Length: 98
Image 1 (tube, helix red, strand yellow):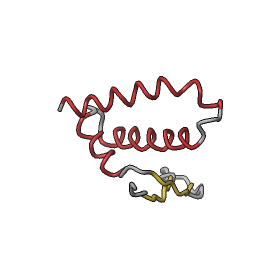
Image 2 (cartoon, rainbow, N blue to C red; image 1 turned 60 degrees about the horizontal axis):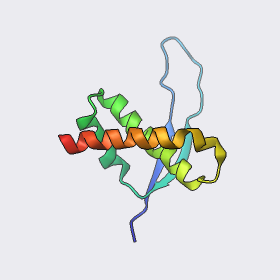
Image 3 (tube, one colour; image 1 turned 60 degrees about the vertical axis):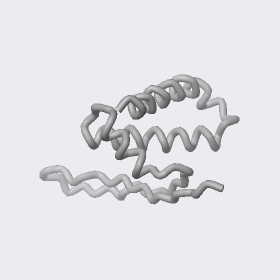
């Protein structure tokens, strides 16, 4: 049986200059069979993206993919299934090439 990795995801706005507006952080939990830290690091190494963009891409894909998997019968995701699968395969092929 594979290990389940649990994460607390926090999205907090950075303060902007001269602004006193405070917006609460968005915090939620996510469970995934993959180690998202290792995947983000791998995407940083092979994607050619800057480190922040690579991490955002890796985490965003895994979060979206996880929801799509748990909601496989939801037609909302039908239009994304094949293109997302192709994109992930292309990203994985970059890792194999390096």
